[in-house]
Image (tube, rainbow, N blue to C red; front, side, top):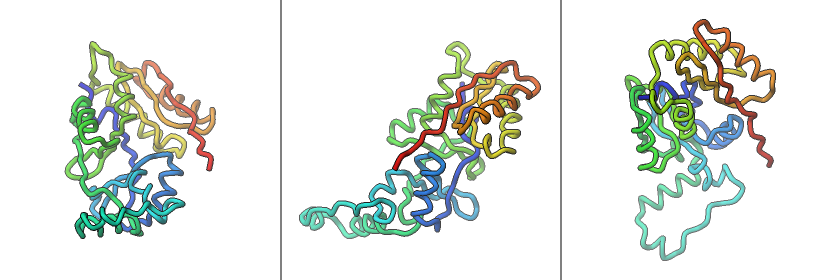
Length: 229
């Protein structure tokens, strides 16, 4: 079956525990992503920051978070109140991040990952190897994997993985191709990601087409969404 390694995003945008909240908000906006892992000096994942974590932050959004009713404050305990205050007023990633981080390995089947996301109502999960971050799986990655996989043969061969790695390695040399997701099945390279111009589409597909062993290329690239303020 398809596994995390076959569909994960290997070029993962991350932040440090001391990264400012405003910088995280700008990063999510500029990269068109909805969450980032927080990694320490040893590249160990210590938390996740999502759009949801920033929505109630005073410094990251225009309005202050709604105040709790006085009777709810009386019923609540001090640790919860202190944690809520820290998350809404903290200045860095370690203040606002979700510390309960679920993870998967490179060999985890897509079906298991889908059930993990659904059960815990999360949108993404880091992929670890030897305790270190090697990739990220989002719901979009799962959908791409399912779209590529053939019902009768939902697997990726070693040769397919080697081709995918070769294409990805070449794409990483260029800023317009570094974040393209590549899934190869039966020698056909499926390309996923955002582009800003048709010239980028052609350049990315050319890299895939010119990789020895690739039998065909399926272009799933789309234009980067424009967010209006």
